Image (cartoon, rainbow, N blue to C red; front, top):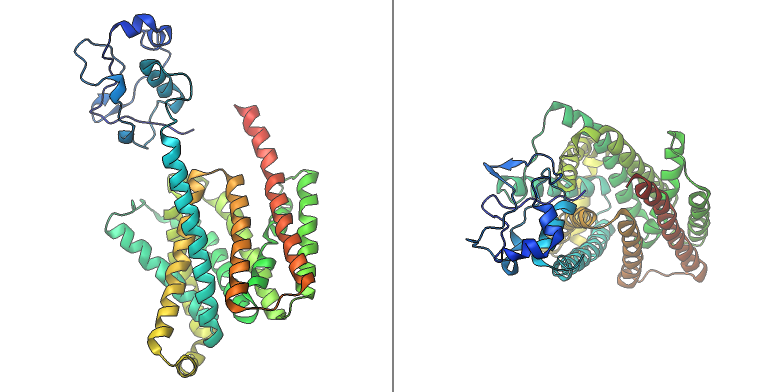
Length: 409
């Protein structure tokens, strides 16, 4: 549950002592029999509700921008009751002022998420068209993400998590599967159109349901039915794809497996490290993934890099353009993942799933327009069916957790 914690120096007081007598709710909340647990003390200042005549802060000047996000023993439900009683406003009116700001924040995050993903896919494909060495490019993208996180931690732009040996050990499995998912997707991008890779990657829910079922999870019939259009749509798109390549199809499928196993192992192995937020968790996964991938990349295709580099420069003409494309692909790979984690912090998993589905549609359309890939009618139909199946899956999987949450509440 979301919890609020007032600044230590802030006391919620009332400018008019008669408010306590006029408002039974406040009289009850501020009575000695208030059924709160023992107040948690922050820097020697416990949270308190007072109604002194010598008030310095009136109810009309409550500064909600000073509310911290650190948890305390007081839940948002209890503190909201106090604030509503003090201000004399009806239920829900206290937080109305924060809704426009939250909506603007989410709009900005979603806009960045979509924009950054489109930029990454375009420049990633541009580089692979003239420098078809996905192992090196994937390693460089993980390297950029690692450096980015180290800079954020060094300059305290992002709180650095306290880690230990058990945390690193718990990350080894998820980071390995993240590495597999990333390099496989990059291999697929190098062999087929970006749009085709994304259509195949929309089948990730199918692998999630299958693998989770083997591990003991159960799903309602609606979830199983929702994956049927995904399978049918991906199959139709594959057989009608102009740029079809078995290596590209295999890479996208292996990427689905890698990311699904990453999610499953993250859920199982990182349960004891919930204090680490999503961005820091992804940062450490990126660092370990880079350490996994870089040595393998040298072994797989390192002997071809120099010749490929000279060929790429001969194709593009301007070396600075090639360097810019590589750098942009590396930076925006990390940025769009960072934006997705920030979005997930502020929205429900269902909203995130639907938004991720719509993002894939936007990326497919954008890359088709940029690279002018020929699209057959049946291919477009299959892609649309697969994406629609992903949307149905997100709707079906949201019903069961929602029902359980209501029963628990």
